[in-house]
Image (cartoon, rainbow, N blue to C red; front, side):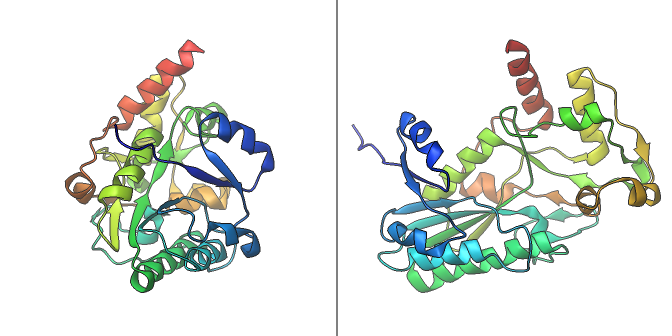
Length: 277
């Protein structure tokens, strides 16, 4: 039988230790905002998945830089997978986007991700780690906080009218987890991968689809000029970028077979699970 792989999870919350141990995971209490707490990470893991978000403000990601510094202190990991965002591409006006397209981050949030990508690439170039960068769009799942459109639909939050609407991309959380594992073992060195399903939907169509599946009212449609005054800035930022992610490299190199190839399939599964509760 193959040897059992030990998994260590970094958490900043001591209260989570018991729950992690119950899942067979070794907890390590550390805080990416406190670089001194990361010293025990050095030389601990041969393969690392880094999914922590950057700080909420600024232009750089001090958290990722602190992690990279800690991993360099002793034997660096054989492989590192970093979960970035498709937002680093910026607004592509609905065009198809492959990984060869240069990053054109338009928001501070996306620029912090670009900085994090540079940091992990530096680890790969200077320490020999096989670094894979996953550019991830909207994640959805029933057990994720705000992980389905249900809450927004219940609030009646508007979406853009057809003429102003933007293309959006998605990945179901279980497929994303499988993508992380595939990249950890199959990802090529210093390689970027779009991790998304096969859906080609505009944002308003996505919420219409979800409303129909959940048996809720479709959201109202408004013009972009009206949205500027009615919607929060964070939501407007997502409505200002349009792109369709090409996932060919993910399928070809990582050999990832999507369980939920379209959001309709994933949302139906979530709705079924919800009805069982």
